[in-house]
Length: 118
Image 1 (cartoon, one colour):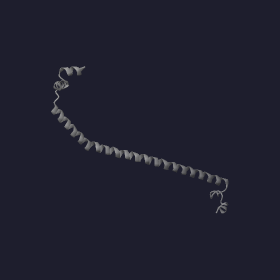
Image 2: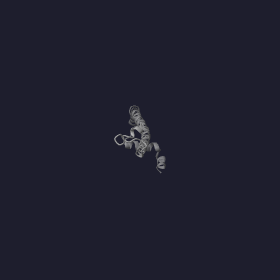
Image 3: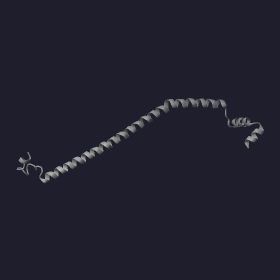
């Protein structure tokens, strides 16, 4: 509806000009602010944004390495637990055999058997 009124009263450009004057819009000031914004955006990208991204990338890499090392340590721990269980089982079987008389007792219990064990 406003377009119809604008077309009949002299055009959209007149309405835009009146609105700009009402709000105090100055094209020279606007252009200088756009240029200033572009300069600041360029400087921030060059001296702030790229270094921050580099730091974030380095941090991401370190976290990834830490996760890989954690997985490696978990595997090593599982292998160590497995070896420990094997040693404990082996030791239990050796004790069971010693209790059964297959091996010599301690020296203070059966000195006569020492000759049989050597």
